[in-house]
Image (cartoon, rainbow, N blue to C red; front, side, top):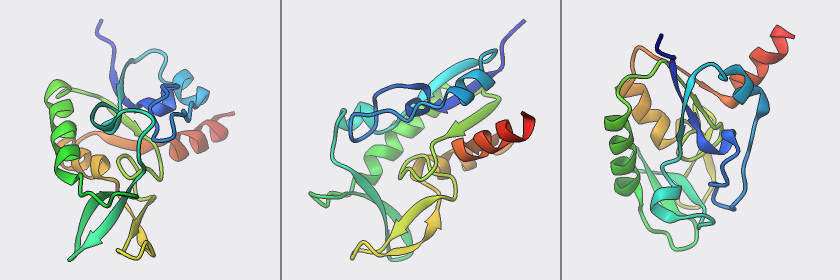
Length: 154
């Protein structure tokens, strides 16, 4: 019997792939998906390495773009290419769990800023946005949702 497949943000699995070289491991998520084939996902680390310069979502002329915080380089296209390559390799998945507040993976929780770095609103990170378009029939969750679910089940 084939295992169900789940894409999970790699930092939630304990991989040291965040911009600061740290992890955001959530044991409850690992436990909740122990019977699944887990597919780790981080579009930033393969491109920029770890640790790396922090990135942010900046609204430019009504469009969300990804910029490096210090050098102010637009890396949107690089991230889109990496995310689309990942999707091509993982066309059939059953669930997706992403890291909240991330410029890549945030699901309605990512700070969307203006050029002065002022908060405009909270929205989706670049990967979450692309995943929602490509995986239309799949339930996409974030670590906050899974943690709340775990507390309800206890």
